[in-house]
Structure formats: structure tokens, C-alpha cells
Length: 307
Image 1 (cartoon, rainbow, N blue to C red):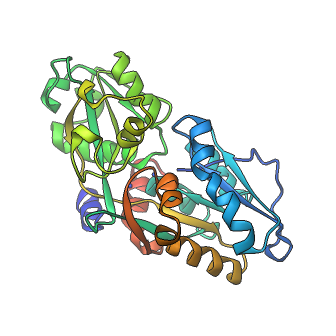
Image 2 (image 1 turned 30 degrees about the horizontal axis):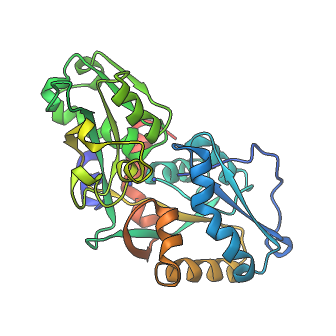
């Protein structure tokens, strides 16, 4: 069964596009290393968080320039990776599954994050306004539910797969209406505004809800001063989802892949502020992974969405 496959796999986000403006280049001619940044939060914040890599990676990789490409949504980064116009991105597991199902050879998953408790997974959580009178999934019957992004693991894929068992039937028959919030940050803001009665976003599930947990979208919003956790209540949590992968373009030469991988593995120790800025919260470290870690999510996406 799909759910048992998902649970047994142990285990969630982000990505970007150049709009096809940059033609793929051969690794040996690479003078520019191109980083895709997932949509879902303010562009200026995303660029600021990844700025430290533009300062460090040129010397590490032996390139003249490191460029950042923030996408408007998840699919922007996915298409950049499929088109060979991006060299590195950090995806959610469902985003990686979409790349894999379209072209298994486009990118290689090499690393994922480790939570402060040692786990390599995170959760989809459903939140509602604390003054809405909604305190459980049962209270959401006949109400409007918001998802984050159609390519988000925690914001759509996992809830769409696991919620039917929790509510005892299909999503369309339980909620009055569903929609997308345009990324995780905007979705939560729309819940606070009352556009949706509740919405699904991602969280480490480690630490305290009142703090936005140790990492995830809620924590990032709290740290930026745009969310007061007193305004929200959590009404549902998914099974554990595999943390999303750091992926690199498969056609990069092995020497560059090795240098990049070693740099990232060491980053939590050599520059923890940079590591935490990129990840958007408090994580312990990176650990190595490959495609096998995401097979359950790939199967789930294929069954639910097809590609």
C-alpha cells in the first residue's frame, strides 16, 4: 500500500529557474556555477540567505562566478534542472521525484539535512487561526483548506496521500473547497488573513510549536518577524517525510561534484551561520543520500500525480 510504503521509507523542501535563458554547458568549460532557489518566500530573503555561497564557492570550485536564480515557484527550479541550466539546488522530496520521473539522469541527490534530534525527516503540519474555533481535523469538515504548492512534498503530496485515511474518505468530499496559497510563506499568511480556514506547511516537528519548532516554514516566518505563533493552532501532523535532497547536475565532472559535496558536508562546522541561513533553521548537519532514500516518495508521486 502507498501509505505503508511512505511510512516504511522513513521519511520533506525548494528550487528555481533561468527560464531557459542559459544554455547547458560542458563541465570542463564551466566558469559559472548556477544555484537554483525554490520559490515560496520573499525573493530578497532567499537571495540574502544564499549570498554566503556566492562568496565561498568560486575559490572552492575554481569558477569565476556563482550566480543565484530564485524561482517564482517550485516548478521553476525543476525545469531549470531538467533543462541543464542549473548546477545545484535544494529540493523537497516531491520536487526531486518530479525531476526523476521526467529524467532519472538529470540530477544526482547527494546530501540531505539531519535534524537536531538526529532524524532525517520532517512533517507536514496543518495550521488554523487560533481564534477560529477550529481545533481538530473534525472541525475542518465543510471548511476551506489551503495547500502550499502543487510540487511541494509537505504542502501537497503527502497531505493528499495521507489525509483521506485520517478523514475517512476523499479530500474533495470532506472539505468544502481546496486551493493553493502560492508557496509556504504566503499560504500561512493567507490562513492568518482568513482566506483559508487551515493550510498545510512544513516543520521539523522538533522543539516547541510556540517557537515555530526548530526549523521549517513556521520557524523561518517567526525569525523574520512576520508571524506570531499565538495566532495559530496545529490541528494535524503527517507521518515522517524524508528531508529533501541537495542535488547537483549529473553532467558536472566528478572532481567538481566531489569538491562541492565535501564543502557542503563541512559547512555546518566551517560556517554554521551560512549553513543555517541556507536551511532556514536549526539543523545538526548534512548526511549522504542517494536515489534509494526517495523511492517511496517517487512511488507516491507517480501514483498520485503521474509525473
